[in-house]
Image 1: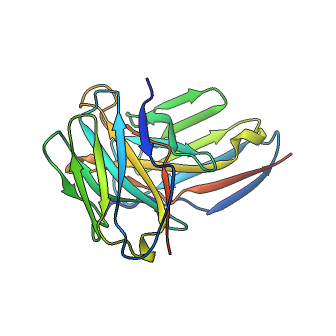
Image 2: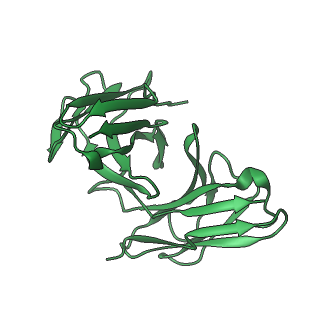
Length: 115
Length: 112
């Protein structure tokens, strides 16, 4: 099992460019999440998908869109990148209620720089 | 909101020492999770606690779910250089069990 995978690992964008961050999980988890991590700010939730077919805003959704393509894949899109979106982005997933109902499992991250 | 507080922001210890860190809140939690993030990697779940008073170990790590349900503690014994990283606590947000709230983390440095 690869767990949660993210591509790309690193990306540099110019202001105004667009890109999509990809995330996939092979644990048959229902819920998936996108976070950003900035120095001194901890992990902040951008968007999440509690189950296939649903998406909801998190704490910092502005400037982002998401697509839950299927149960395995959850992508994050930046339509017009801004320097404030320079960050490390993490995808996470979580299984059903029952065993480990709250435990989220993280991918390795995408380090994005917007110049 | 349900915030989790971790302090200090950084801790520096000597290899071989024990270290204790805590996570506190003004709200009650029914689950506490502890994650570790190695430099350049994603957070990895270390320990999950589901019952008030519960004490759980994972190798040299021991975590406790506080009796008041408003705090949790993580102890690392006989630290080694690979213990370096950021340690986060997390708990589910009431009424939104799909979501977690995270502490800001404690960066641990271990001097050889």
